[in-house]
Length: 112
Image 1 (cartoon, rainbow, N blue to C red):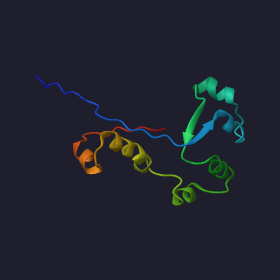
Image 2: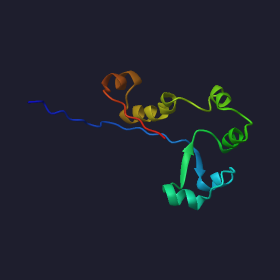
Image 3: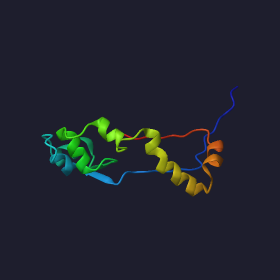
Image 4: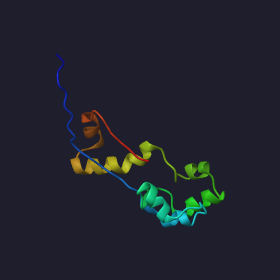
């Protein structure tokens, strides 16, 4: 007989970038779409981005590249993106990084 295992969520942190990308924003990007079309098919009304509207437009127009934005620190890896959520968790738990890290068995993260 196997021993039952339980999972206990003891803390949570989150982060969402400040730049809001509405469906209307995508209408201005010469993508041959409309806000209604996007919402009708996906249910999405807006989403968030670490890049500003201007950076996204410049990338779309070829005025900058993904690599240039990455070098400038405007595009980051998932671990870097997760730092603010980790900091929020530390603050909520009132622990140092070392204290919390030594007690964590699993970090679950997600983005799209």
